[in-house]
Length: 211
Length: 211
Length: 211
Image (cartoon, rainbow over all chains, first blue to last red; front, side):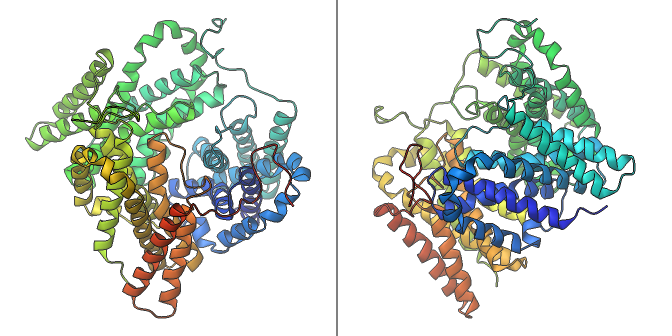
């Protein structure tokens, strides 16, 4: 069971594009845009590699990854010129990057011999941490846990679908496609129809007491 | 000198309960509550393991820990229903979790052969980082260094008590109890009587110049 | 090619002084000041050591480093009494600490066999992360990417100067001096004349569309 490296490269690229789009809305210079793109593309995978003690880190081993992200940041001036047309598409690279990184995290954790539950959690961390970092660097409140776009929940569900299919001896590629479809579909649907989970409790002090 | 693993499990449980109580006040869904509980319970110990190069991480090795934290988060709906009665107790799991994790960090660092001063610092980091993460995830200003509840200071003092007793050949269990009592007692007293250290300087610009 | 350890100690000291000056403006107690000084002095190097899998961490191996930083924090009451005279000097330890840590990161990465581009990036991360941590702990918006004092950009340029001179077989010490001069000079000039890079796009919604 080896995770196809072309998918990891794809995760890096779409995450970097998402980071560029986010950063360029903040009036950053090109190095600032690069930094956000870098953090978005490599943040989650770096935590994954540190937690699983994988050495060297994936972006040090694949030394062309940072160069590609730098290229994307350099070209951001061009990308951003078409931002009006691009903005409605922004959730797509976000969801796709998260989905791909979630599955790398889950797959590498299983390879390292963790339990299935721990593998799913490492998947969620890998998938979501880049976006959290991007939000922090752009001085936004991280959108991870603020009600509504249930980011971590989608990653959690998709990682279980992936592991479940592998458990029933489905070929790796089908399991990957199913996991990806689950995460991206759930995420886009959650944004489109503004799905939320019920809050554990009516928050904001002064609310009425629950049930 | 081996740190009793039952104490580490206890640290995980009380920290997770603290995380759940904190998160559920923010109107998060169950996955959000789980995430905060997870970060609170495993944040400090993860830094400790990374800094000391302990592999695998303690929550990957003890694969039942994340499952227990997940169970606590699932049950949070029940816990939270009694929040009115529970809230005054909130400082207790906070202080106890911090105390237990501080001592694990100090003990594991000594095991790894660090100097006593470095061991104390690793203890403080292990004890306080989970709470900092919880605050960040809940979009609160971390309470660590804001004057008043002198969190890091209590951990610092208790870690020295623990090491001091070991230095004078006290049995491990007595040293642990003394360190725990020091941290929890100091912390609860600091909250109760609102103890603070003097600021290094009168802050808030426009204040009168110091002495 | 070995990085002179006296320069690393100097980086620790000036970064700790910068952290003390920053923290004492916030009315923190002595443990709070120590924490900020600690994070500023060791944050970047810790990430560097974790990312390059260097064990033990530099401040665990050099156990006198944390003691020195603690001493600086203890003396901060004295330092701060002269803050009026010191404040205009604040950018100097900031720039020098960043420059020194940037070059340690670049040098250690080359030692570990990374590509030049990855080494430069590790330099920038090592140089800037301590300051980001200090800002976060002091509840300031990190100044790293907010337009104007182009922190990361200076580190980036200086790391290339350093590597470029080594590439053309300049002796290590000349390469170090040139890299340091580049970073410190560029940084102080950027602050003095308020240099900025052009934003990738006019930000703040409602601005006129670019080009």
